[in-house]
Image (cartoon, rainbow, N blue to C red; front, side, top):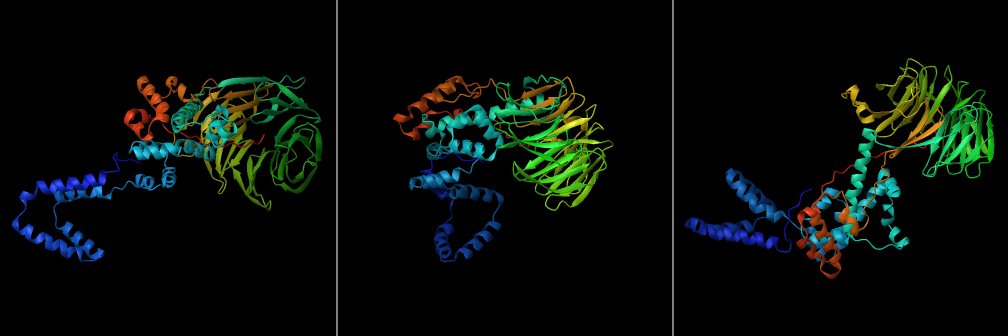
Length: 559
């Protein structure tokens, strides 16, 4: 969005005066006939209707030369320009001006600041950079989570009043915005290059070693172990804060919400625990062999088992869970299930993926393609992505069952897989975690060699489970460890007040300009805001930082 920098208070009068001067300078070239007839023609022209005038002018233009068209255009351009923002402000309607400019993106907002003093005043007084950041936080999960991790959420919305913090001027948010973009840019680069900070949890299992499943949030990691226990770890200190015992076999799958943990085990039971106290609330007995996977959303839970069946449950409360349907169709152990409000998707050792309607449990279709049993899958946004003991990953269209792409790279069974709108992350028995470019994989023109972005080889055993979000991957392994790969650099600090702008490395402008700009801002309490642009260089207001946004939303299921 480009704007012409003009002084809106007088530009229209100036343009008219220019036209008048042009007319005066060329008057000596006019013929006597023109002087006699022009007034008569103009008088006649003024008596016509708007439609007749337009028709006449159109015919007139068609009879003129192209070089004359260019001159006419130079007359028309200034006549068509209207400084609506300045005029609204001069009429006491600054709030309306602010509402209009709120629709601009960051680059357009930068350009608008340079139009004239009135526009800069509206943007500054309306705190439009603050509002732009707040819109990003509300609409983009990456911005929202980053604001919490970096701490600048305390400067947004009403947090300044709640925290009784010092009021921040518009210039503070004007400089905060590119710092956020730089942070996001660095995060994107870290994902592409595999630049991460590694944290390691040694689970110290007493007997059988291995961590089969996990789920995490910002406060904790909950893991299911081969030694029959569920261990809860503090996310910051990585210390074990609670151990749940009760299963008589390995804990193969689990999921939790804010009230309960539901776990499935090789002892064929499903157990429900109080997430706060760790108390065992309920035990479900249905499957006659190991419970390999489970998923629940709101009041619906689906479990699958080595007994080849899929059970559909209704959760009324932790102590009131009723089985509603049993789905039968697979000819081998059902290793994984996933679902939303439209489809249930299951995968089995029989090499097939089956799709069922969620509401009626009616069978829909079978996906065929894997050459060996299927160990894992995820379903979201019309896509199913599966991993198999044939060492491949396949991407499927859920509506038609077509295989869109085959990803090859793992050397052994692909045991776990997760994806969001940008990347696929897979873990395998070869001990490797691979990050794949999902968008490239969905493009049939992409070269196979460009699909795998990074391979991580930190585990010393089979990778059993992983999850990830915008900032990290957390995985578990047969080597009895949980690894946390943090792609958000912890040492990066924001310059969150105007006093620290001078030392901020990301502004990328001359230090003298920064000093001048900072002193200008600090002195605005004693001067007219309209004078700011007179003492501020254009370069101070045109810091170019590429706008990047990585929208990533990963399922918070523990499986």
